[in-house]
Length: 183
Ligand code: GRF
Image 1 (cartoon, rainbow, N blue to C red):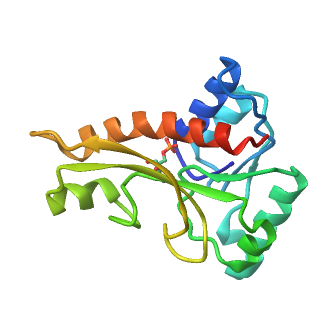
Image 2 (spheres, protein in one colour):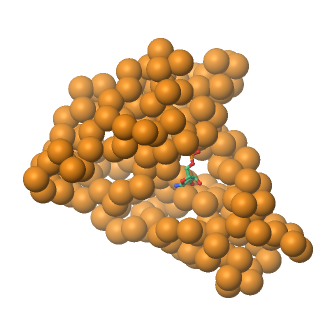
């Protein structure tokens, strides 16, 4: 799992494994930020956590090579980007072709990139949601695996809409990992 922050999606996976709803193992949690709460969640779950920071590497390629080496050491069937806030390039992706998935808080291809929930509110759409997709060389642009729809309600602000989307993210991500049959 690659993470950058809070790690609620990571926690949903831990909870599903713990609750017998997902037959999988999280081999490693890799963060690009030492402050990511996701690392604490990994520690509590007794899963190896690693921090690899961009600023410790002279180029993006070196950074991605370090990330890839760390991920490869865990021998994953699947690499899950769950709130990982960097765009990965070929140095990382070529090593895990077709095995990297990402969760995004909109119905892609609408609203890729940052602040997808705010983009949805500003566009005035009645329905938004979340998407899990295979990662390619673009930004939130790879083949879509599955989506969940979330209605935009009267009085929604970014916080309220994000919270309802997040609930669906947790369910969707666990479901997709289960269906991909990966450990
Ligand atoms: C989620 O909304 C995810 O879709 C987006 O970043 C957020 C991460 O949340 N890519 P968390 O760190 O899993 O709580």
